Amino acid sequence: MGFGLTEEQEMLRSALRDFSAREVAPIAAEYDDRDEFPMHLWTKLGDLGFLGIGFPEAYGGSGGGFQEVQIAGEELAYASFGIALSIFAHTSLACRPILQLGTQAQQRRYLPDALRGLKIGAWGLTEPDAGSDVAGLKTRAVRQGDHWILNGSKMFCTNGNICNFVVAAARTDPDAGMKGISLFIVDRGTPGLHVSRKLKKISCKASDTAEVVFTDCKVPADALLGPPGSGFIEALKTLEGGRVIAVGAALGIARAAMDTAMKYARERMAFGQSIGKFQAIQFKFADMATEIEAARCLGQKVAWLADSGLPCAKEASMSKLFSSEMCKRVVNEALQVFGGYGLMMEFDVQRYWRDAKLLEIGEGTSEIQRGIIAKHLGL
Image 1 (cartoon, rainbow, N blue to C red):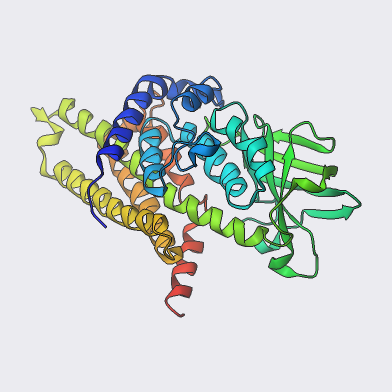
Image 2: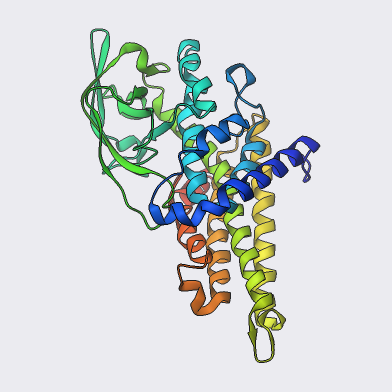
């Protein structure tokens, strides 16, 4: 394991940074205000191969692994974590299980169009009464002949309003505990699938979030993703991979907050000099830079472990926990540098401050991460 990027990874970072600066950053505040995802970005991302990062070329992917996806997460989140969140909910949460568990027919049906931005996926796991407790989900799927009948609801479903399909977890065996959970691909427009409401958030407002309800939703038998009962383990693997990617998002937000605060500190005059000349402000930036670099090292290690096929559940939780809380600290200090202006909507630092909070909740709360780490320590 090295600490530098390969030539190909540097080229990827450069391309993503250019795209984000040109296509995402100029519209980030507008779509945050509108509570909307900029739909025109999907095909642009697909045409440039960015949606295919981490997927095999056989299905229109661009190759690469978690290290490359982490780079993409950082560069896109630097411009807008809200926009980045919808993108990675599509690729890493909805499409990844199809790659991992799907039949060739399922993969051919969904992945090529999904990686081109022509079909958008949503991930249906969390429920109104089951968030961190994945094994406690109540959505049921009952086999009837050549079909499954789904009943239940999914909360905080990213892309729920704009998706073409949902990868949803449902209980197929009520007596088998975690081994009784399976995954299904449900196409938008299937009778019985409907979006009950669009959810308004204070964080990542440019990402689409909805409550999705299944009411006697009848899907064909081949909508089952993987063997019956494999859904819980795959959901955990999906969340574990999401935690690796979340490190990149935390780095992107933290870098953006630090950069904008440094620019302000150089320009803001007080007591006859720029505030960046005061040691109290300088020490804030020293701490920010150190924490960002520490999180980057943890993130690089866990991405390398994942790409090497090595166990990394503990490290994924460690890096997700540290990077999300690092991001909170960095953004909080960046906003403090702005003083009263940091609370004004016209400055992007308030958006970074709002968006950073989601990282401590999504993909498993900080409390869940600490519990996973403690379990791996033998406690």
